[in-house]
Image (tube, rainbow, N blue to C red; front, side, top):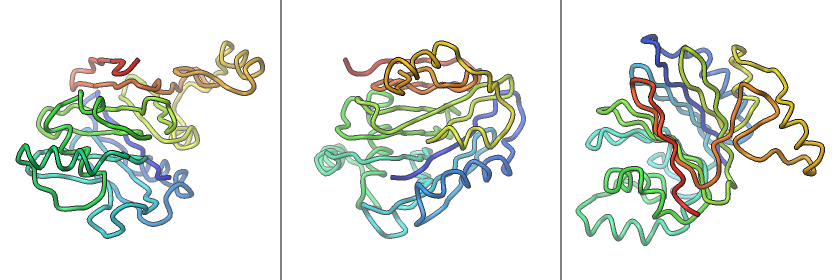
Length: 224
């Protein structure tokens, strides 16, 4: 179990790194082995690592591939990463680490947002394209790994738990009445995309979301 978080500013300003740090503090229990951050203009990533695959520093996140101009934070496990690694190597990709994180980077470089169709596992992914200035989010088919997000006139934030988003303190915390109804009638389950708060949503299982620099969003279901 790891923790991911980030912010993409869409109003021309830069992310407030103290808020990123506040989010990361709320994710500490999810990843005690390493804490890392990355920023590129309007985008900032944070990651708390629980080391499982590739225990070396090469597996730390955020993971950046300068040649591909891609940066990634990821929570989960890609079960078929050895097979995907072989496929990608046959297509000319080279690897500097042995875990599944880099496989996601290379898969995105090869297949774009369709890369998630190749993944067998449980995952929540946030990937930044340094050239296109796009943020790509995706969640596994069953929704095992969580991915919460909030939006405002300033930009877009995401995190592995609700507490991390609340740490920023500038969102709508009004109770969502429909979610509250679900909470009491569905054995404490609130189906995505709702959460108990109107200002926070969950990315639905088997969905990806692409956010462009102009604020346009493209939500796609990649598996049925």
